Length: 182
Image (tube, rainbow, N blue to C red; front, side, top):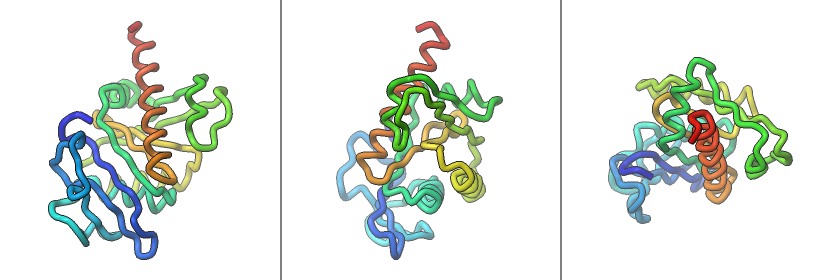
């Protein structure tokens, strides 16, 4: 993670819904347990000091739409660059790579993974509504990009979410390097 970029969450309780989420403004490469907040389904801090990420609504939307146990958001170079490069297409397509089999439910390299691209709205409530609607419509999506911003992905648990980040970031870098002859 670069500096204070990105944010992470994990479901602590399903009923009532509670998330552990990173506080805003912290160096994500140097986190300790005290720097996570516990929030409710309205983003209200239940336990911990600090403010939750401004993008908390996106985490909640993903958990609601997918039943995710963990949500991870990165601001990698490749996800940021390719979200702009493919913004007019509305999505980035990743296909034909063996690493795709690391995504939940994907059993062959002959798979096309589509990462939808959303505009980087400062109105997180509106963006969260768009994200939740798409995730309910398209159960095959494992992640999405926010234009000029980064990648969101999730998993049934933290280990699966981490694996999805690693797989998708790897594939985005392959795509970016192959397009640029690097």
